[in-house]
Image (cartoon, rainbow, N blue to C red; front, side):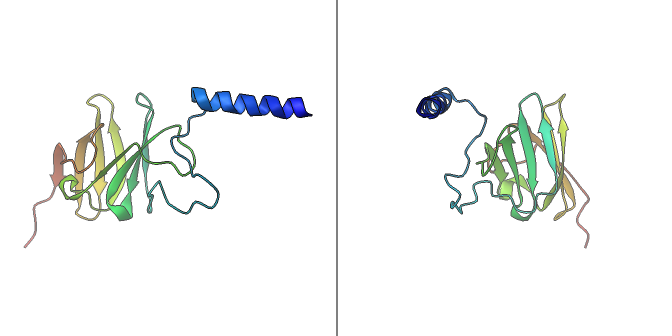
Length: 136
């Protein structure tokens, strides 16, 4: 019995050293109450298979979160698009353009579609915006 537990212990140490598993950053313990994901009413996701990324519209926090598609648990996003320059306002749906490597976001808060580079990060302005003119 001792040898079995010893082997399990050694294997888990080696797995941790070589990076087995695909978790990005999971909760430290079951009592950890910090929300690393910052998810808030996420209505849509899009997966980019080529980059192994999961894009999540984070509606109530006016942001787009990007996770590794293999993340698990209370993971930190790899990138977060948010801020006034992004023009994100209650983002809902996400569409991926694999040809031009762009991400299209529908925003219900300002009735617009904003377009970003797939690698956009932080308070980045959109490449393009589709929006009706303001009404008086």
